[in-house]
Image (cartoon, rainbow, N blue to C red):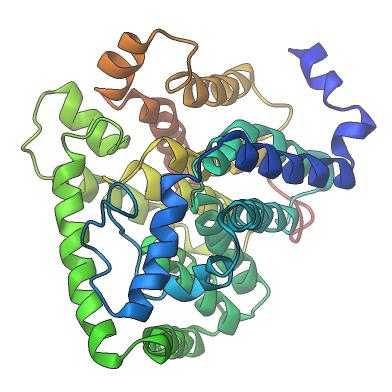
Length: 392
């Protein structure tokens, strides 16, 4: 293990230009590897085109793409610049943009570069998976991290912007409110949230109509409600703590609330240490917990979503006391391996589908990490005590 770690300590691996080049090359290879434009990108384009045409954003369009859209009307403006390009160029630039958003978010985390550069390697395989499927998970993770960073810098105006962006794109951004208690301007922060909510609600009306956008929000709610039900029996979805419990104990009809409510209670208990609110390691712990929570307690979690969870696992690892205990290193490496292996071709298809997917086992190590992190944040055990309050 030491020789493995020493190999990645060579200067080339921590060089910022080298890392950026890897990020770009992955984006290019992932985009070009598929001879056909990925279905997700076609769905994204459809959000813009259907908003312009003012036709239902959430119905099926089998002549255009498979599946259906689950993004909000505001997403039409996010994807808009790419829709005017040829598909091969559009999907390439889209994938590069998603990857670079996460790269920038990682880069500005308040963690010393001698540790930080390892983040990029930990999530590399999951990044490639997201690019291959033209997913937005890199953007969602970047928005959550960005809201955290702006609150720490007392730039609540932009923190609120990032949170509302995430909400109006795919609801996930709402978890950025977990950083509310770190804000030193809570009244202004709340006002900014309403300001940006109004802006993002109105903006799509300029390319369609107020009536269509308002109706689209009703349609969006219905679409998400139906998808939550469908996820229960779709083994490619609900790769979460909810799916793990339901499928392992064969209680498929059980309400997700039986898992979500205990999760929310545990998440809330992390805030009992009010004296820790200003400490960087505590704040980073809440960030890690938030990233893990949103994946573990969402029925919409799928394989590609785990780039968000692995980001949380990475932050958890780097706030652990040093030198790292063997079990901490083992759990990190096992989680990275398991997250990749359970949906890779390392195992035969019948094992991947009939065991790993069927029982949502991909969620297991991330759930273990999250429970350990919650315990550590509540008890203040095992987490680094910093002399420098501004950088880990």
